[in-house]
Image (cartoon, rainbow, N blue to C red; front, side, top):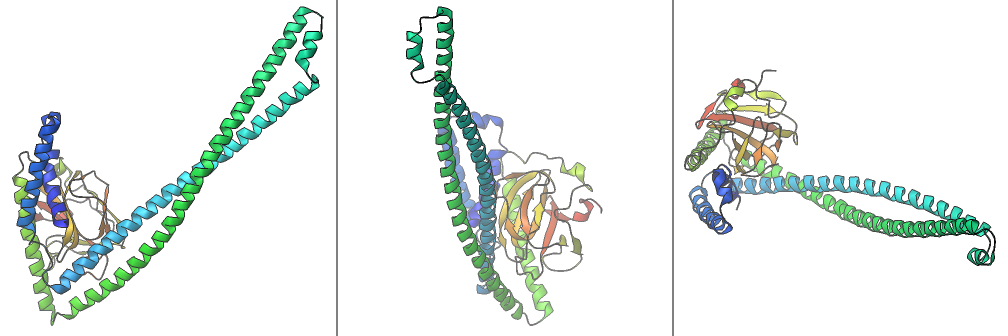
Length: 380
């Protein structure tokens, strides 16, 4: 299913970048087109399903636990975001309730004044007016005064009833928010425990993977094989992009060379072509785990999946045959097919791919060939 997701991201570009006339097709034609794309997704998924996957049981276990870790992090983030929203809504509802109660108190005070005025007129004031044979003009004025008092009293009573109803609704909404907050607190606790369990499990898997190497040479050989597999996946992605009816539109990324922002702030621990292994074609930026990783330029996500040696890998197509790769992510913040702008969060720094230290691997490719990222990002 996850393989289908990143393939779907590539194929979605065919619709996203298609001429505007497609949007004007009737519903039947659109459905036929979607059905055809669905079949193509299935076909491409079968062609690419063997690439980038774990090679043995130990790596399959690593893939599973790191994928579950990423999903747990994403679930925790979603729960915490919902809790923040509910807290904000609860605060606003309480402020609204306080305003309603204050307004109702004012209405009660005004009604009390009106009732006092009527009381001063004595019992049955209208009967007294009828029995009073005084000046007709004075009678009219008194009747108008009584009518206004009566209308004002009725309005106050209506306003009080409306405020009581609004207060009841507000109290009900507050109770619903509080119940959901209680549920969230329980689920957050469960997810936090699951996260701790998965983290411990991952440490054991990584330790087992490290123990299988008899020498540094064997470890580097395995890393180089991972890089070769990644190259095959990238070539396949490049080939699928080339098949699109419409090429990716330009985002003018070439004009920003040397001025792109860093995807994450940190120190470079491995330079371009500095050492062998999966990090050979890019740079490694050390940063704290869970630090947001941002897009360096406008583009569209074409791959977001776990890959051997790279862990959670995300690829963005920027048009003009330029792609950026972001590996060892803790989790994804975007999905395949999604458009991103410069500065948008696309993921979080992590240790996926069997790493022992949190860092971001960042790579830039032009026409499928790796180029030095430090020539594209701004100097510090």
